[in-house]
Length: 82
Image (cartoon, rainbow, N blue to C red; front, side):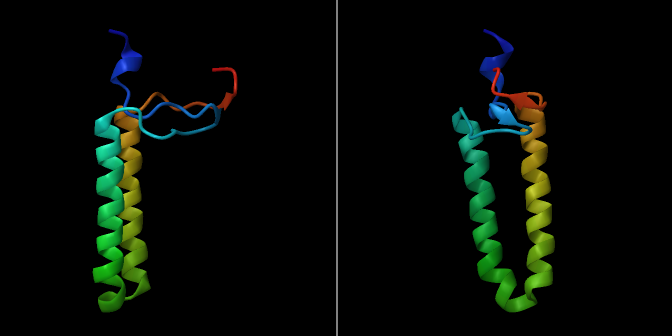
């Protein structure tokens, strides 16, 4: 089994970063991110306002990037030559 089989998020074909997940674990991580973001919008925005929601979103986004960095293909710039 190659290392590529263990990646949850493949590198994008064009540009820098990761594409959509290719494993169930990656989809689960993306779903958890979306659910937590939705829950934060429902709970935080009316109670604490937009500043708290922006901070919450930044923390969640940093967590998703960390998961992509650890479980995704190493990021580098691609020009479609993959």
